[in-house]
Length: 553
Figure 1 (cartoon, rainbow, N blue to C red):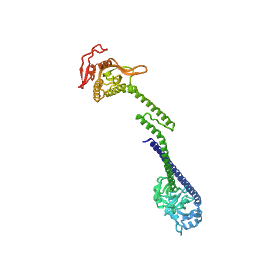
Figure 2: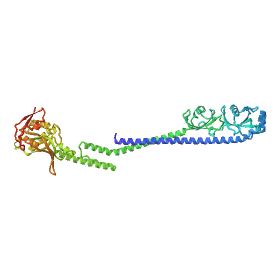
Figure 3: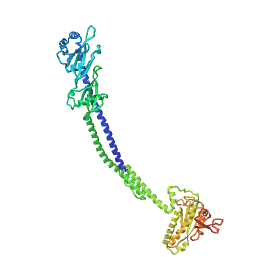
Figure 4: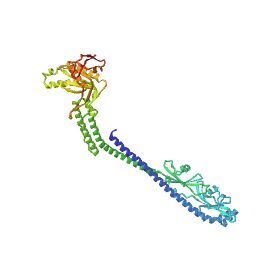
């Protein structure tokens, strides 16, 4: 993948990731604000309901407490004179400021008002089968919530006591309808819904929307406070509830359902804002990343192109990198490197021209041991026979051209057989096998090379031009190899008796012959035959030398 594309994708990934994280954080903030808002509304309404209930109960307890020893009420209850009871108690009951009030007998049975139809509240109280007999008489009366035929009322029961025995002779019941919050009477599309659950049954404010759904949903939703439910049209509601003070046998809970539609809409707007912001940021970031990627990758691309040109051998290439200080420094360093490589290549070309490529490679890489060392090596001398007579009538240019063509052909054969061209001396070429690199078959490859040189020379002579005849002498044995010369100029070469012997054998070889010593003959294989010559004296050797003429079998 291209560098600029990587930068672009990286920046886009950062922008997209930041937008996603921001949207998630914003969503959590909206949800938290939503929950805090619902909780605040819920707490306010719960506090208002509790305060209103507490004030009403306290006022009713005080008013009804004044009637528990009323002699008229006591007498009517004891005599079960219900007509006189209600006639004499009309004023007292009115003082309770209750929506409805009536009596229970000593057994807790409702006492009907003579000649009057029971009110809905009275029917609700009568149908509730209030458990008055087990009410503790030494504690303040506790209110109850009663739901009957859709009528939801609160009631407070006060015993009328016999002052002599302390036993109740009847009960005064004050009842009033449950007071819903003012918002419960709003239009059907209100964002807050209310309900009361009494003994598992649901009571709703008059004309409140979605009554059937609330009646079915609320009992199951009370198991977990703070649960979310969805209305039939998909509107989400948060359900909160709290218990209403009542007798233990008539448990009641006030339920508030707060619509989350507005907050969800705010959440969607927030998400849309972040999505739009992300799209804009990605577009802007993409454009900026493209610009940055190109500005960063252009110098790198220039350096890459220049490096490829250098890899193909063009050391003249230079780069002009501008912009950041780091790129300018890199471009300057690259140009210095290219100049150094060009200089090294120029020196290498000169070195290859004046030294054998194998020696040049060893010198450049630093692997050549510049000190002398003794090695077993093969030495080959090749000389042109009758050179003086051949070149007597030739111009200097013709002589140089002939020698260059001849030496090039001979060197090609030498290199092909793994030899090292040591030096040229006039019409003579010296080659070495085993230095600076050695192998077990150096002597055999040298012999094969000598025969190949004779064959190549015969082929060139047959191809036309001035015929050249050569003689070759080869020897194998220990020599001293190393760089030798003055303090200002050295030459890698070999010295020793075997070098002198190879030179003498070259002098003894006739045109077209390859003359080798015994050490070479011992290392030949079946592809080369050796014919021994008569031993002959060689300058520098005390004993006559046995030499062999080589030929292919």
